[in-house]
Length: 139
Image 1 (cartoon, rainbow, N blue to C red):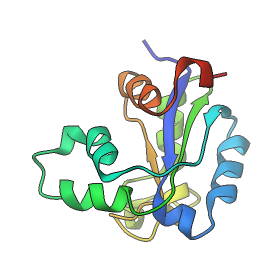
Image 2: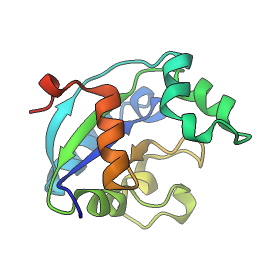
Image 3: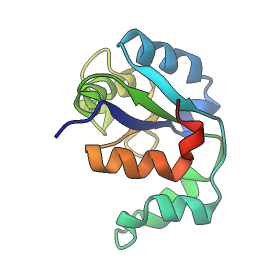
């Protein structure tokens, strides 16, 4: 059953490039309500915990290094059909394959530095949101 919440985070490349405000504007203009938001930086250990599902993949250590290289902006978003609608808004993981007007087409630099994360399922949205935010931080 679909829920009305999803999780996202603006990644270090997009924060460093100054795209945070423009990305948040796109999210809100697409009808999402921000339930929780903060600016933080992951340690390599915390990045490894978040991406533990990829532990056996060859890119895991590079991913940990990249995701702990600078500030991120994690958010919990709310909207009907949140996960699917948000995945459409952000575009394909590879920005070269992303549709025009999507966040990744506009702001990603590469497959690795692709500007934004979006949960791929309702279950992962809940897990990922709870990784970054306590129940008292979700409004």
